[in-house]
Length: 115
Image: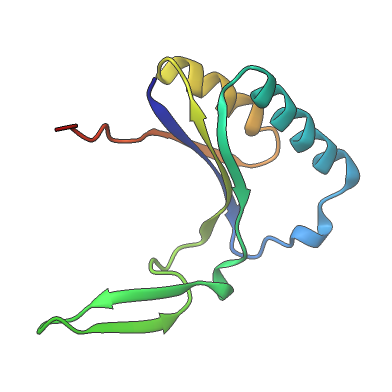
């Protein structure tokens, strides 16, 4: 069964301490629903972009480590699910439920060829 990333996007000024009990409860209910349906493979929240480290390959083979996210944007991924879903339509249906308070992106993982 294909796997899909369902990523929650937050604005860079997002403050998770402002999440109310209702929002936390809604996410818990969604996690339970995904688990009961056998769809949730993995789920996790991410620290803010200020806690990120980026590594960039340099000419000559070196790698430079910098603080912060790799891309400079006005949004970041705040959390995500990895779902087992029959197809994109099923994954999008879960994404609709996750998009109750924030923008969501749904993307299929590439199937790696087996030898």
